[in-house]
Image (tube, rainbow, N blue to C red):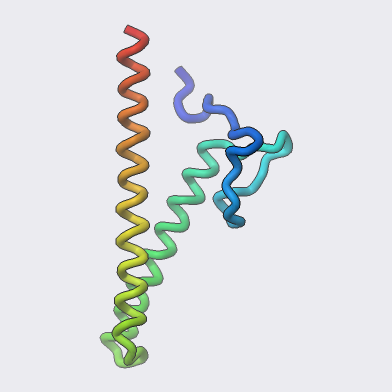
Length: 102
């Protein structure tokens, strides 16, 4: 089994509307699952880094708006929780495929 590299690209209407690094199209009109997940991970990482930076700025006095810091922290938290739920669903699907093959 080749793992995640053997999963083919998404086709046609399955293309999300978001424009960003996670959704760059391939030549055949689809996005590979690996590229999409790497994009999501990079987006979540960026949100985490932005939240950390805003917390540091709040502590140093550069930012006085606590609402801005809380918003950045909550965005990072929600994105991380969503990423974990996606991971859990992928693992459940993988385990189900293994059960079907036996």
